[in-house]
Length: 265
Image 1 (cartoon, rainbow, N blue to C red):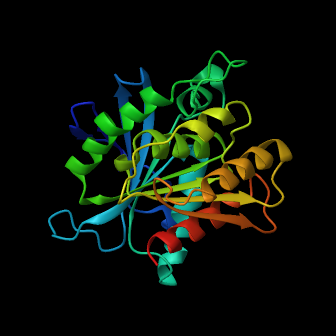
Image 2 (cartoon, helix red, strand yellow):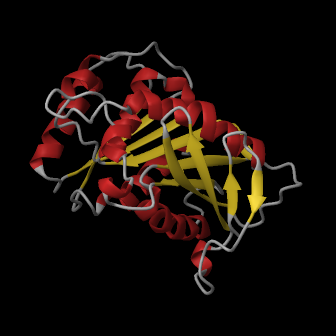
């Protein structure tokens, strides 16, 4: 069903979110949130695990998926299969979407997901987007769903992967698990090589790069991996992987599976 998610975390009922027959996407709820922190409107899709009981005692890890418009339906169906194979735990999936791929229609990802870059004036909104997650969206989800506030996970691909690293390097205690797939650091790599947080004992960071990724993305990602892997005491529990056979756009499901299995091993 559709519902509206207000800044004050009040929900109101509306129409079903998914067309009939797509049972791989069942138990998905749609919300809207108008963010004061990021000054933007977002569509939020919440997928509940089988057997979810709003009145029960079980609390579930929550995976927040950036670029939720394309990635939420992809990973929602995939998570269903992974769970059938007992490869991942039961989780709540939260997809955060712009509702469009067109920046002129409101896709703000290149602003929201990025640290500043000299040659891109519109980059640099990651601090506000992080505040949107931490002050608005996460509290609303945890107030309205049976979410485990000690098992928050953030997943992002490409510029979304950059934001995963931004959050891990600036506020590592916001999430328990971070999964960055093909992080795109091609315009502001220096920020990510020099920004070091205080060590977060409970933060776990998984970073993967597709071996067939475009060199303009892969080479900066490999520099990040080399730099932080050489640290004797990195600020997080860190795991890095090369995904054989994957390029920039094929990698997200493989990164999700590998990252989730590592987090819950």
